[in-house]
Image (cartoon, rainbow, N blue to C red):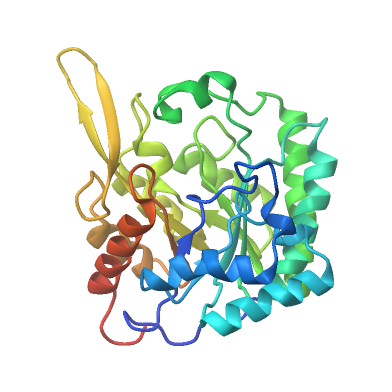
Length: 314
């Protein structure tokens, strides 16, 4: 079974900074993978300077699953020296669905599971969504352009379930769990579909990362966020939190969205977090934000989260 964080309240609940503001390939063409531990430490000092004591080393920045044992030990020492813990390790756009790439991505996810356990994290976060299309990379906000969709093929869906059951057993063997990130146009693109998919996987180590922001930012009708929380709370292992302003004009059908600090957007996280905790959620949070100084907004979001989490232990 995954390690327990122990009794949790607003002072002890792990709230990590995502590394989505940082890229793996640098402007000079070099890779973060090849940087010295001193340079890793310099980057992660941004995180501690923003007041975080936890980080999610999202693999758009550093692929810890592709580090050698020696280099992974270096990374662990960097974290220790900076006083950073890691509640979860997220992957970004490593799609576990497409038959042509699934074997390679699955092998990578197995390496991520081992690395996640090795650094003392509790959760590995995987997804079923693919790389951004060329049109999405040109857009100001990539979610305003239609992207990759999981195939409407029962055999491919079943093969994905089998793959995730295999990964779930590996996770259980090394004492962590897996959270699948909800994302549009995937087999877990709505709360109802996500719950059905998790129940079809039917492995206790595999649950959800109900990233509500991924869905309420879409310029199309979506499920009410209250329903998403109610349905997914019992299955939630890890939680990427972000928020968006959302405008819906009922007279024209026009829908638009833009990133917002956690307390100002459409989702009432005070209500959502309470409902999730009441539903049994005890996993880590990971703060994300697109646009502007995403790290500073994430730090603001961390303080808001702490203010709404339970004062006494749960």
